[in-house]
Length: 99
Image 1 (cartoon, one colour):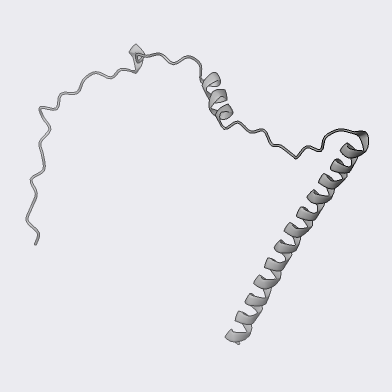
Image 2 (cartoon, rainbow, N blue to C red):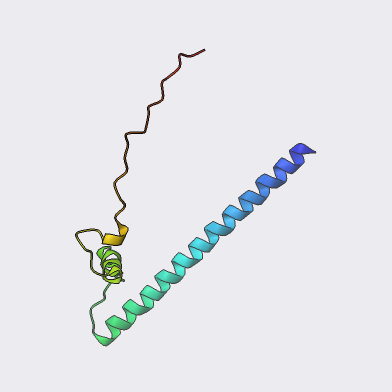
């Protein structure tokens, strides 16, 4: 019985992988068809055929976050400064030899 369950698991995983591969293939064919129609239309009306361009500037996210955060002060605020602690009463731990 365990070999039959292992066989069913392998069969299920194989079918799932084939389904994912088929979905990716269909998506690629659809994207190619859309680009072909777009290129054909551009050629028909006399415009140059241009590729799909994704304009993503990685600096844009940082710029947006900087704009949202507001101005940065070079010195800390008076209410955020904690008083200095006195470390005179802190003692170090003396290590013990391994047992």
